Length: 201
Image (cartoon, rainbow, N blue to C red; front, side):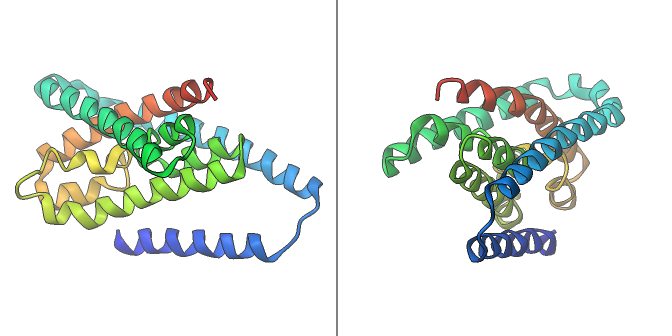
């Protein structure tokens, strides 16, 4: 898990270095933008398929309704407040900052979508949410003894997939199930929330 996070971070840095090192014609940039849009559509399609394959997990949500609802609400509210606070502290555009924070760990979607508005927004969206996933890998093993459920919020949408093994390993099947549903709901919400927020841009 740590190796995967490191590999993503290294590829990300290499991409930035390569991007700054070469000068591309506008038509190549347009092609890249179109490819990003297509890959984004494929990503959303594959997420939908993944949700359908795992739909059987939803039958047991009734066992943990209060925990799941409270956890999702706290993750969204905390991300929103964090985005607003960071904008106030840095002077960054508030709407974009909130959209970035409401990516809630889904860096591939957030970065790709915001890049359609401005490459800088995409860079910030990707970086911020990638860092959130890395924070999950780093902090959850420390916090799980006292905050096994609350700590799930750190991972945001990643608790449905990449962060799920670490939660299962440290906190067991029950917490992993709660984490899966938490990430599942956020994965449904994020592609709706971010475009809605950006309508106010």
